[in-house]
Image 1 (cartoon, rainbow, N blue to C red):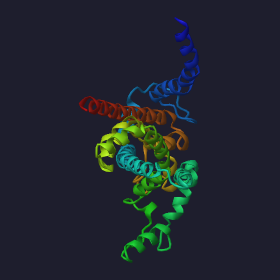
Image 2 (cartoon, rainbow, N blue to C red):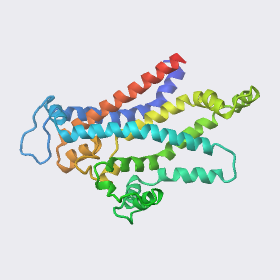
Image 3 (cartoon, rainbow, N blue to C red):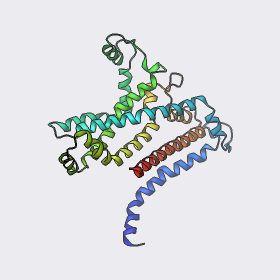
Image 4 (tube, rainbow, N blue to C red):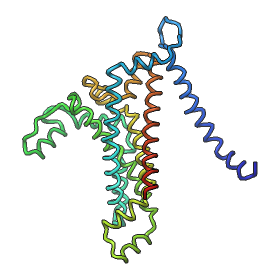
Length: 294
């Protein structure tokens, strides 16, 4: 090993050790537990169950509903949040007086703890005509809106959580996209302007291609964050009503800590990991195919 390889290995060693200790080893431990019947406080001896634990989980309607809710959440939130973050980044990528304050204002929801954000939105979604969201919808509909209890309505509970998540998380994606926009060379826009390209043509032929890698990163990270949805569900709806807003992470925590079914909780985390891994691999493959076509 030459000196450059040795220095590279030495510098990356702390990260690799951390990855091994805090990701690889716990995951392998969870895989091992998922094949057992471990339950805290149970008088039964620890036994090997094989894939029986997974069969029971997939035959549970609550877990199937949680998987479906996770999928719907990702399909709706990831594109909406990414587009909204891109629009905000484009608006804030201008040299205007006080633009730093606007950037700070839009990034502030990311700084707040999710638990605090969820409590605030519980108040916004308060039932009755005096609830802020009901009052707003009544105003914009010119008095034609019927007040609803959003967080206890099976049709509105999950959309209410989606809205909360989009409001809280858009600032994070916006900052990343804003950094990507500022890395695009100004000479490209100047050359395009000389050639007669308008703002719309510059956006489609310069901005989007130059932001390609940043957008792929944002979509991947947003997908992973959306897949582990828990805090908002725990505080706002407790998975209800009738599992309308439950998620895989919520079911996992309920199994592992509320019912002390450690093996069942471990199996659910393994399933969630494999689902997220599959989605991210599909996204990367689609992005690679589009790159080869272009």
